[in-house]
Image (cartoon, rainbow, N blue to C red; front, side):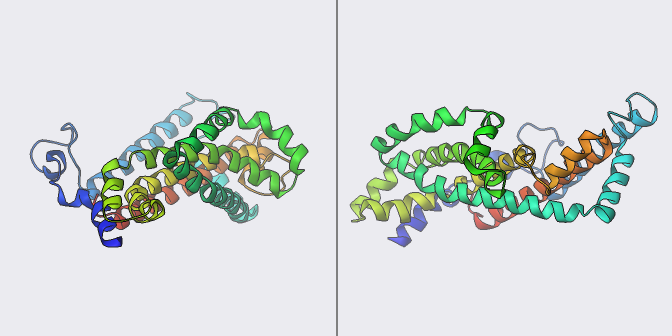
Length: 284
């Protein structure tokens, strides 16, 4: 059964690669849907980022922007170094990372089986999907007072708010991934004598795994976007606390430095997960 599942999950590897992927030569960089070498993509990404920073620095230096509200990148970098060396910014970043990953892990452990069941058994999906859709559209900041009433002002509230902003989005993505598994896979598995539980574990889950991992990567980014909301609830640690404290005193460089740290953590995590995805699913 496992061999059949493996062949079915890796079926795209036997197909012929699309012409847009195979053609690497020819016209210039701006050919429509042309694949680029990895080094070229990296160079373009660095060049684009550097151009934005230079334009930003030039606008700040020439007085086009008010440094109180929009300081230059060099000023933000100096503030970042000061916060790293004098204000324990790395410790705060570690606390925030732990909170995000804890909430995300809880959300993923709950969302994956629920999402699979929603698509596998339509009676279950019909019962719970309206509830999930309803809660999914509620703004998380509006639920902060209720969160404090329910959980107090400790770590539980922060984890809950991060979970709240992630779980209801992720469970629907998992359900869609399961729904996209071709019905033929289940029919073949049934023909070979697989029971529904075996078909789910050995066929459907393996077929949906590449998209599932990609959606987990995306929703991890969403979880980070709720960090500030979670860490203004009677917090005394975390990047959100650092940003919110600096905001009170109009320390814009410190605020932007905190935002930059969140962006850098997110960027590094995203690139790492992308690399793991490419390595794990080479056949795609």
